Length: 384
Image 1 (tube, rainbow, N blue to C red):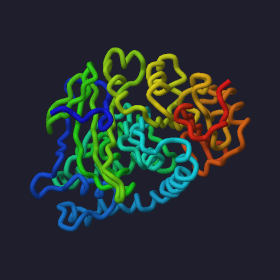
Image 2 (tube, helix red, strand yellow; image 1 turned 135 degrees about the vertical axis):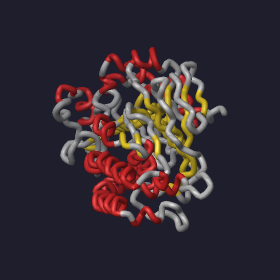
Image 3 (tube, helix red, strand yellow; image 1 turned 60 degrees about the vertical axis):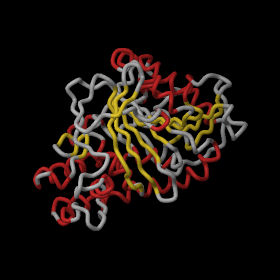
Image 4 (cartoon, one colour; image 1 turned 30 degrees about the vertical axis):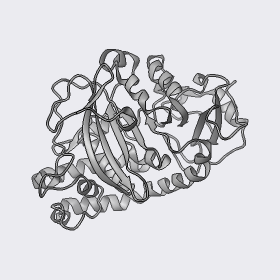
């Protein structure tokens, strides 16, 4: 079957030809757990009455897992609550909330992007982490499930306190049979965000930039692999979140994912989001994704590790700074941007009530860049 148009789907990075799509059904088999059951189970939340996962919530492995989440999640929830208030009062007046969101280098970080852009019809997340999958927990052996839950808990121990993932750690933590790659993290984050999971489908984007859904058990080919999850939060229409595995360097895009950016353009004009991006877009070897974001996004919300301030075309964007910009911390201290510092220092200080990216409370900041044609807040600083 043909995949939905890019406005409701996503693309990914080239995968080895032998990569196999994990077992994942759009609808639960007769008597099996639903995708919503699985999301709540992996989020440490009670499943529905009658679910085949109900008995597994009585196991020591799940009880320990749920207890750890219940203990640690409030640290993240406090930050997310601050984000929710800031989004509604400070960010929403600056940009259109009903646009799709493109979040490169974010990996499986659904929890922050959904909180900062709650009304987006579709989200496109991209990273280097494998797509992976979730095997129905009731089909796993008890010892496999225990190991898998421990790996998932371990993968969360960075992002809960710090707001970002380490790709190398995730690869180790989420390599257990049954729960692999980013899919279990996406399920967990969406369920913890108050969403009901409706459907999940693997897809692949061809070198020609055409996307197609994969049948359960079908192998990924040499295109860009991804997963598209449909979900709904009470009081909102259904939304979609797509994750793609893609190397966004210029060379990799040209050799292994030549159709990706053309296909991803279907999400635009979008709101862009960048944080904890390792200053990759400052590198000349990432000129294509940088140019894509500047062209396809009507607005960009980012910390200083995203698009370099000098790259925004002069006279085309308006800027609003939140928080106090400071030189980056080790190991990125050489990425200080004097022009960004000058631009933000010329504005009134607007507090940022939460920590984001690699920063701490004393130096966390965000830049909101809006194309002039879209801008609803005149008179902001322009790049010199």
